[in-house]
Image (cartoon, rainbow, N blue to C red; front, top):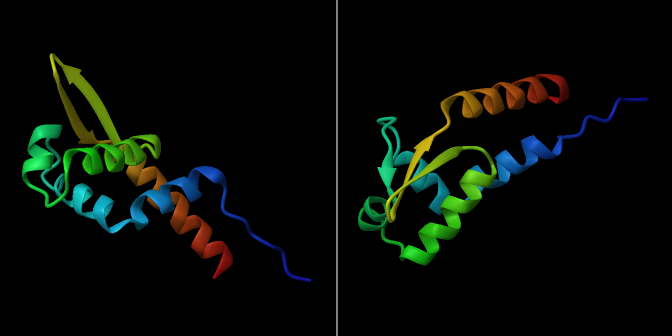
Length: 98
């Protein structure tokens, strides 16, 4: 009888967050690793502010982005340690199941 391996909720949340095409495009805008204000993310995308806001919230809840408010502007940056941790966790899961 084979052992059934399950994805924990943390990894599942990560995978759901990176599965959306809009969220992937947003994450790619951080390739330089620098912090970006929401207004800049809206300007550089083809999406409206409310859509960007929703997608950023999903990425933050999944722990992929960190946010900081300065005055009226909200700044986002990737949480590199968390992203690396989740990729390692995914790798471990895949080695155990596949």
